[in-house]
Image (spheres, rainbow, N blue to C red):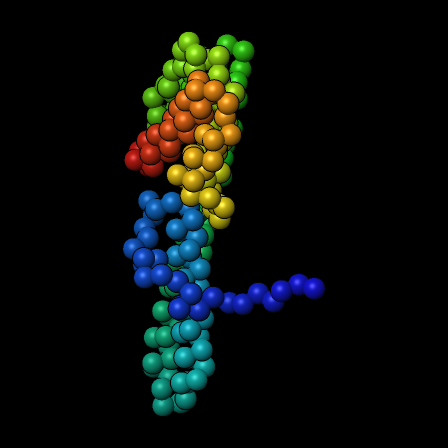
Length: 185
């Protein structure tokens, strides 16, 4: 048995959704897009209820507003999807570089300087990679856990001080990369 999908209503969203802008995280952009679609749906309901020959001018203004909201929703959802694809591609490339036989750190990207690893960090590069992957998962759309919860849980799964430190290092390195990436965009 499948559950019926319900179109979101304005009351389903927090007031913070209207503070979202193009530099917000992908999940927030997606939420704003959903909010805009709910606004458009409400306007369409209003239009259908109010459209009479005497109120044609008001109906045309309402239709223009619906078009604007739908376009904004489309753009926010497309921006969120692109940001998510870019983040995943960057993480895959960085993890591949880190895990390579000669990998001594993360190479520089156009938006982030190189992040070197040495000594015990290199010996625990798999734990560093685990931390980076955990950070990315915690920042992804619809993440099951917040970043601080993912950090605490991932850290608790590691045996030994160096493994825990390497996991934390990878987690923080990836957060740093995402900050640099967002700041340079």
